[in-house]
Image (cartoon, one colour):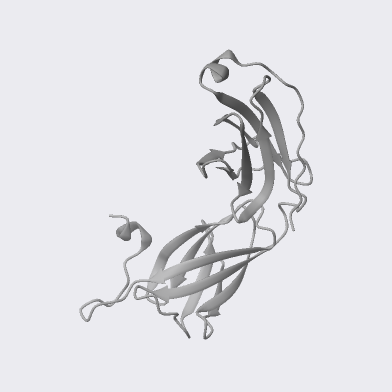
Length: 206
């Protein structure tokens, strides 16, 4: 399990945040080597279940304003319920918050693929290919009776998912720290009697 470390460094008073009943959080996220991590962070209010998101930059930094006098569940992509923070209804309203991912970003990640068709049925015996984006090297696997296949991937990398007669079918972006495993569900487009090849992901966006 990925461990998180929370560090509150300095308190500040923000008149703008006070006027809007908002607290300002400056957040930094790093890996175990103190290198910055670009990641989506989700804050869920325990008071009204409101959801707020923040995307850290390439320097691992992001800032977000949240309503005060509330507690928030902190989630990372593929890491639910990682931490809880409290914003009190008293000055200061500015917190500096640091998340340390104890797993290194260089750790391999198992991509667990589940393939279904558009009717929701699990697809057994389908040959799937995974190619790192901008690379010609690819892995292949055949889905089992549960529509599943497993691939080795690198955290933070992006991959092109392909099937037989369906090159460039889908783009999968791996989180910077997947905790050793990442699950992805892919829906296979059902061909009509007149179609010989599936549309690629760019065609399906239009």
